[in-house]
Image (cartoon, rainbow, N blue to C red; front, side):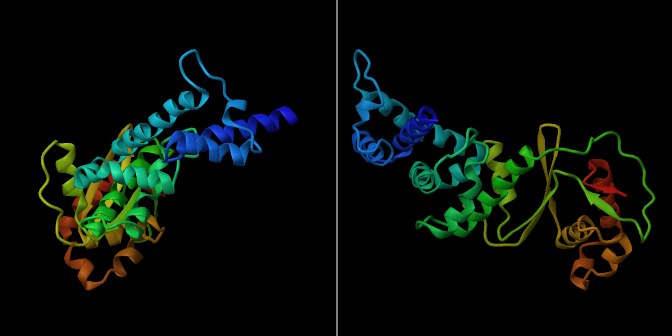
Length: 270
């Protein structure tokens, strides 16, 4: 048990040094005071033939921020493009507030939208937060367990009493900016125009295989899908739509929406 406790203290010491944003020697001294009961870092780490113990752990400390940068850049390419040179500063501040605490980096960016909302003087902050929410939702959909086999869609006769269950990977999202077009431009390696003006945008995101798909929805489409995904029967969901919602749902638009829902198995009858 004593050996296990010493190992845990050593692990905490190493992690504390690696994630510390400041100079390595100071980070090692602070961590040693807290985790090694005041003993010097050299009591836990051995030097090499050419490097001191602190210099050795400094290599990993230097790599940590680079790894965090690469992980967040992969999950938030739109945010990286929008921030430009400020993205490195954003990463440094973000991982200082929310350091990696898991063996996986899949959920490293879970707090990015709230961090953007409450810290710093980021340009176009409201748009950046919406863009980050969209990109975070993409990562959540990609990582979600796909319980439903896509299979081959079967024609379904839907009546007023028909209910649906949402696909396991379905996420419905409303943003204050049309961030989808900006993200599409980044992915196509086009230089997006400046951040779009504020305008409410609705999305449905889901996964097929290893591909995350996004539908840009009118307000009426979105509200109907939201009601059906919540388990309301089709007739009740349609009857509860406001006149504003109904303007988006002509007979043609409604038929198109249901063809998409069935083909993509966004909602499964039953």
